[in-house]
Amino acid sequence: MKKINFNSLFVGIGGSLLVVIIDALAAYGLARLNVPFKKILFPMFIGTLMIPWVITFIPLYLQFGNMGWLNTYAALIFPYTANAFGVFLLFQFFRGFPKALEEAAVIDGANKWQVFVRIVLPSAKPMLWTLGIFTFMTIYNDFLWPLVSTNSIELRTITTGIAIMQQGSFVSSYGKLMALTTLATLPMLAIFLVGQRQFIKGITQTGIK
Image 1: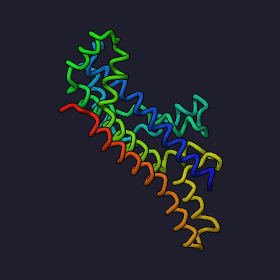
Image 2 (image 1 turned 135 degrees about the vertical axis):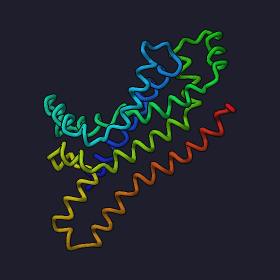
Image 3 (image 1 turned 90 degrees about the vertical axis):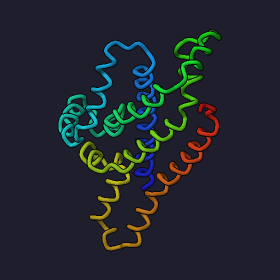
Image 4 (image 1 turned 180 degrees about the vertical axis):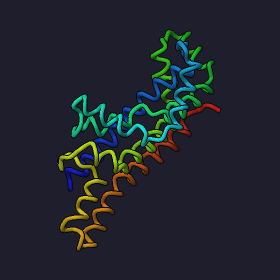
């Protein structure tokens, strides 16, 4: 059970960090930089939100199988990264970010990367935490993809682990099943409480009206 909890936390936190980093870079580039064809790329990103995830399930499974990544941590983390929802969420914030702050930083000698890391990202902390919490909950609660992409007990996540235990000796012990499901909610509750505090702190420290 400890290994299953570790897998869920490792996959959830690792996938959430990748989503926040990749989506922040993509959204800032589309919103503030002179990216070629960005007027075409952004609608394409938004259009992918209308594609049901089930349609991409089999191609994604075949792709990971050809790469030899099935039954690995990579198969549990990378399918969730760089989602269009995060790009859209952060794009709206970056597009409305005051240009005067960026111009002042450039006058002080900052380059584009320094402006992004030191000026823009700290102001976007509430949005980053919101995206991170949503992503963590999605990865942590997913059942179908971890069940199909892994076949080793050592790589099972909390959702697939509980499902397997329901078919074993725990099926006649409702108390143990309830204890397992309660224990499974604790990491997600902790992430939410920490994120909520950081969310409020980020808003009070933003200073942009």
